Image 1 (spheres, helix red, strand yellow):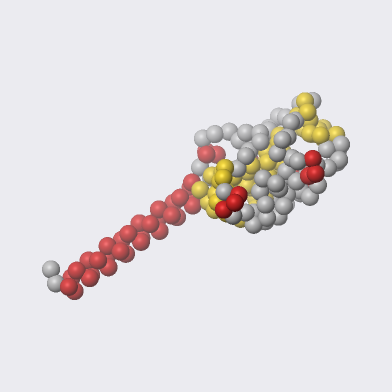
Image 2 (cartoon, helix red, strand yellow; image 1 turned 45 degrees about the horizontal axis):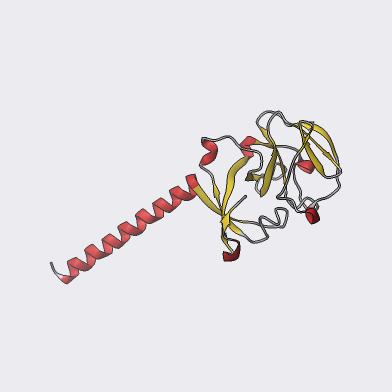
Amino acid sequence: MSISLFRKSLLWAWLRDIAIAAVASILIVTFLYQPVRVEGTSMAPELRNRDRLFISKFFFHFEKIQRGEVVVFHYPLQPNLSYIKRVIGLPGDTIAIRHGQVFINGVALKEPYVPARYRDTRSMPPLVVPPDEYFVMGDHRSVSSDSRSFGPVDRDLIYGKADFIYWPEASMGVVH
């Protein structure tokens, strides 16, 4: 084999490998995992401003959304924006908030992910979460714009579950 033919075959091999890697990356980001950046402090202390994480987009096709999961969704009042919040109420739940304490179906919700310094004293009258909608709240209650202000989020607006923080390195780990 001449050097010229060797270089051409090597070039084609590189181009093939790059094309396969690009297609695989596009498929992974489109259907499985997507990197996102947190903007704001409404999910502190679990997620901080400028944290980078992977969200799972695939699991929603096979599993139900569970209370306590951190989800990413299109903001109902401006769908070109994305929000990240914790699921508090499921379809059919009655949610009430009395002086900052969340009640689900009359039972106080234990929320170890909300430190005392991030709680607030707002109240909200009982609300029944409609079918195919979810009541979401930020963990930093005193600064969060969430279902208390814009209402429950339609299932069709939710497109991912926060899975893994990959940056900064000190925060690396599974999202709880």
